Length: 117
Image 1 (cartoon, rainbow, N blue to C red):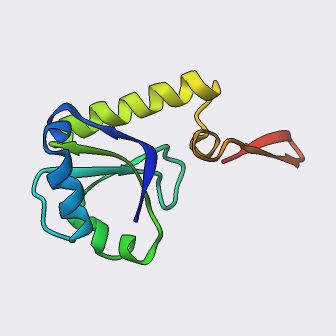
Image 2: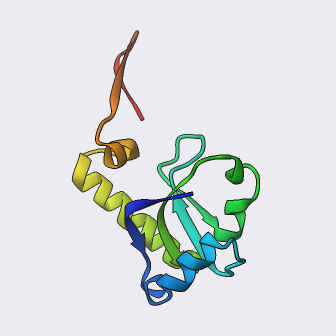
């Protein structure tokens, strides 16, 4: 598990930052802690999951990038909203890869150019 260099934290999560990050490293059960990350599959922009699921299939078998951490699901929704808002302001679109790596590609097909994220 890797952390985004500008990790987003909810207000309650900021108060418990050290304990939460240490708990994730030690694979401890952290009730009410949610992890925000790019989706493993599908057309979603972000995925919000309870921290306990990070070490269960299918997530434990993947290299995941944690973009945000929150305490309570409602705080996770706020943090995800902040990430999407900044994503749009920085890139002018919703290509998360563009924000993380600095570039989206384009695929030429029958219908013209299509953004590939």
